[in-house]
Image 1 (cartoon, rainbow, N blue to C red):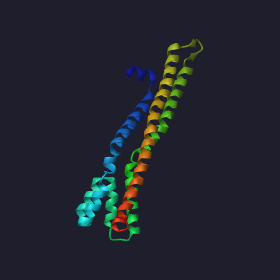
Image 2: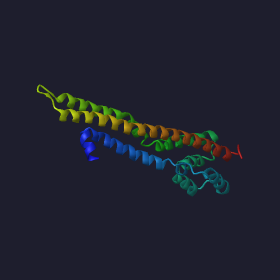
Image 3: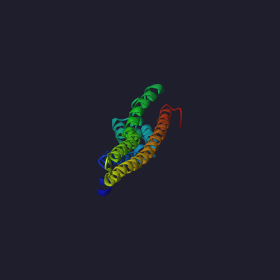
Image 4: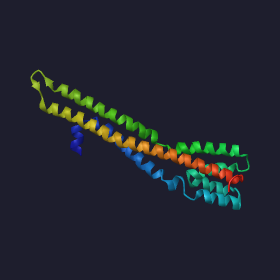
Amino acid sequence: MFALIEAAGWPIWFLIVASVIALAIIGERWWSLRASVVMPRDLLDRTIQDYRENKTTPQMLSRLARGSPLGQVFAAGLRNAKSPPAIIKEAIEESGRTVAIELERFLTSLGTISVVAPLLGLFGTVVGMIEIFGAQTPQGTNPLVLAHGISIALYNTALGLVVAIPAMIFYRHFRAKVDVMLVDMEMQAIKLVEIIHGERQ
């Protein structure tokens, strides 16, 4: 490993840092965006049952808001349960925007890494090319400097792609997952509003 880093030269450290950050973001988002954490399966049914039995209580709203992102959206709607449906839906939409920001946390950073990593690899390639040209002397070519310049150029290019490709795949995956979750949460929240106002059983 250390031999590879030495062969790739100092530009490789930028890519190593980028890869560590990307792995940390991927692991954190993979854990945080689990469906059981964001949208517990039976939360809508339990919320409807609690509302029919006890109406809205501060304890229920607090429990919902702390429990999950979907619970935060439900709590926003139930706080305005006695208001007209338009006001309830507006409160749900505002809460949904807040939840969306939370669900999309760090994704911009991951997308940035997926774009910047090939550029960092290209930077390492340029550094390697400079070393290659530096190997040219009036007396001839220094083979050791030439080989080192080639290794810097190739290792950095390769690692830039190795970091960028998985980062882009996971960025797209998480963005699509968040979009699907937000649509599902909106539909469940609308269903809750309609049930509260007797428009739906």
